[in-house]
Image (cartoon, rainbow, N blue to C red; front, side, top):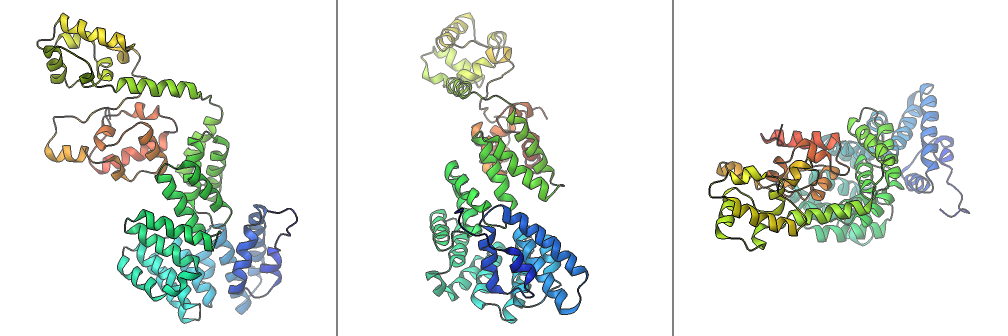
Length: 446
């Protein structure tokens, strides 16, 4: 904000005026975007209104309920917003009640509120756009498309129209079209939090961390800020080693909801990372080590006997050889001292030795293969991509970091191996175990 810009007086807007009308909403949004201090001002104003509500009655009381409800909506407290807006009346109250219900994913109640808003005189096209979003989230893309077709004239100037178009495109699997719609929405309204969040999320999924952080940070400037923004941004900050900012995100979550156990554990992990030393050189060495460990045995010229013995023992990479002992190799049929010496030469060339990981406690990460003694149904399940577990952003990023691509590869990891991964804490481990349990599966060693 320009230091010469005067802050909008939110107290004058909400306290000193008796009425609060739709035309004042944009002024409130503008004021909240000016500076973080305005959020604190709005909290204090809400407290003042609560005290005034206690000594009011009749029509005046309903007007105060409206002001508090709108204030709580922009503070992100949807439960309180619903509580007050239900006790107010008029098109503006009904419209914001619908939005608050929608944020709580109470879609049937949201539709009822939007119907009431339209019947009582709220701008019909604006209501239709909100209704399109609700029915889309209910899984009725056809109806959502029909609603948008009725208000297509809004495409020239309305950010919400393009946001809803983007949501529909995303639901239909067209990410490119969705992105373009969200970008158009932000062009028309740089403060459209919904479009900013979806752009952040899509960039996050694509691995464009820098762009994702930029969009999420812009979301923070335009309340209401949803929990997903803080969670996702916190994880991205951690991945970038910005642990102080990650901690701030989780602090905001725990302050908003002291009973959010997941946020509390994320905060604990981030705070612990603040005091840990991280060496990029160490990670580089670890990555190089992993690449060597994944070199397939077929890359080397081996005798037919050695090759067949290793294949029979399901040994495919150099890493596999570091996880088996010499006695185990020699115990295999037709695997003798000659084959053992042949393997030793190859391992020495790569700076490795047989059984090395066993001696080191398997400290380096590696990718395991699905078991072969499974039924066709079990093999099909194990071959499914790990993305089908619908893990949280943090857990998903850890899967990527560990190069775990299938459910089978995940099932052959132990809890300890997962916990060794950067930013993978107790919360992520619990989430993974719950997802696997739902499929009748578990981690190795559980």
